Length: 164
Image (tube, rainbow, N blue to C red; front, side, top):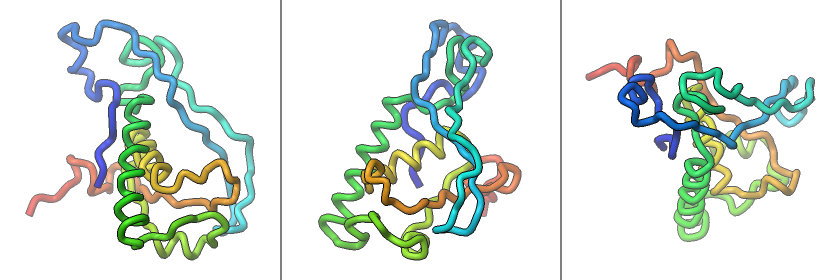
């Protein structure tokens, strides 16, 4: 399990004593698009949309969502992914060297990526995987599934974890 990297304050109480009185401008955002169809035959149903938080309309002054992953945190997770690549691909040959032109079934049987549905943890997982397989600009990578679930049922969230 990987914890999210550098992020903005996560709880409203963190800013109550004046320690976060400045403006928080977040340049890291992500694109979303609607797709349909089975893996390997997905059809893009909409253009890509850049998700942007409106300035001064959030709990923190500026353009950041409370707890949003920032660029430094994304870059930290990419570096972590490179370390994992060195260990599991280069040294141990446990994972494939490349995913370029890999079929979806191979990717699905090799990787199970799991995240909570919290934006910063999804982005952290994406950054970690990007560090392991930084072939994103080739245009030949298959879709990679990032598994998540409703927060009310997610056992990775502390309020849903069952103690033993």
